[in-house]
Each structure stands twice: as C-alpha cells, then as structure tokens.
Length: 153
Image (cartoon, rainbow, N blue to C red; front, side):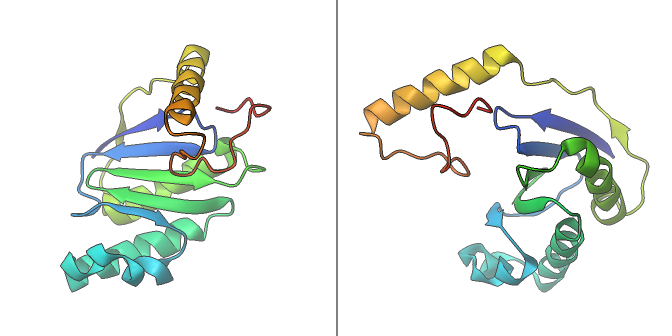
C-alpha cells in the first residue's frame, strides 16, 4: 500500500493519504469510537465496516495526543492536541494504519510536500477574506480558536 502524509496550514492537523479504502463514506470530526453511531452516515455503512472503523478509531485514540479523526474514502485527517508534536505521534499513526488499513501489507511512502510559509500566508489571506464576506461569523471546520495573534495558520 502506498501512503503520503500531507501537512496543512494548521500545524495541529495532518492528512494521511492511502491507496487502500479507509471508509466508503466521509465521517467528519470523530472524537471517539462511541460517536460513530451518532452520524447519519452510520445507517449506510455495513456492520463489518462499522466494526473496522470502530477498531481503527479505538487504536488511533489510544495514541496520546490525538483529539479528532476524520475519515474519507482514501484519507485520514488527524488532529493532535496543541502541546504534542507530530514527531511523537506520526510513527504510531503509521503503525495503526499498517496494522488495520493495510492489514500488515508493506507500506511505501510517497514523498510529502511540506506546507510552506507562503501556503500559510495564502491561507490567512483566504481566511480574512472569508471573514469579511461572511460578516465575521464564518468558521472553517476545526478552526474555531483562530485569532490574529496566532501564527500557526
């Protein structure tokens, strides 16, 4: 299985792209395996897929520092707590992906593209424009704590 880790402008989020199907439906903002059933999408998943997502969610939340997981067809979007560093978490996440998603198969990394300072500046400009256009009430998912003094976006 091939995988790629993508950095995004928010330092607390990384996306793990894989060539094996993670989930047939997109599940956003899971904070524990218990709330899988609270998603409307739950009704469209097979019992086997629900169990697989439950195992994957339990394994990911067993890693210290992970606070949120989003599932997409071929991608996991993982949010860590602010005081943790990806160097402490990334290898554990890859181990879980290899064990559960790849079912132990060999994993080959596709070189990653780091998020540059120019990307972060562009994101901040897009954020500011969106806030102007939506009267200051606009919020991107997982960005509710954004403020002008925060340099991580």
